[in-house]
Image (spheres, rainbow, N blue to C red):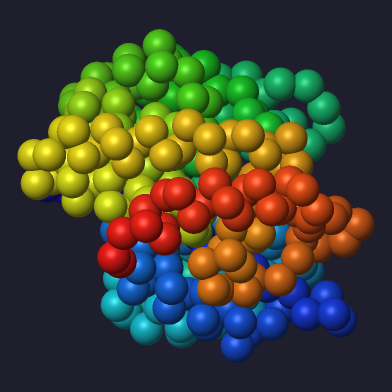
Length: 299
């Protein structure tokens, strides 16, 4: 129970010139470290961080600045996902040189189309594992990556280099089995999503990956759980029933950036041509946030 935690990816602010606004990123990293109290900060590792709009050199710059801004206050896991295992290895070596404590790697689809097989997924991770020296956060997300079976997930978690698993499915049947066969079996620590955070903890999982500001609510939930206050943890989990679900048709990124701005940390707008949350949806989401512990309780 006491080992539960969050992996938190700071959002990437872009200026009008579509370059990363690094002073704004520093403010975002400070918010994540101070208010979300993560187990690890994730640098350029998940889609809401919009790293895929950057060149490889710009991505490295984002990684470098994120690690610099974290400044050793908590561990950092660096995203190294790429269709080419050689580029993933290059990013992993760069991350290790900068002092990162782990890397996060998405199980990729075939670049040429079609679902990758279990043997292909395993071969990709083995190829990366052989050439790097950091622990891996195995990232499973069937949107940008492969649809990984339960059996394949377990086999990937058996790799010596894999120490963490980030699961995005929100499928309770799948999650409950994998918690038993991965986390409780001692293969790796297993993390899910905000919608499943409390049940993940109850089943014996290690926590979740949440973007800010949802991560601040997740932090409060985990603290209530660790204190043995199930009623308070349940009350906090219920706040995820509406936020961000009611506005997810816009996508998690626009909702997260609008919500972060509402709590006073401006991470800018989504990278064009995608639009920010606006109008009635923005007003209603902001009103919903004001009814959560992001505003109604002391932080």
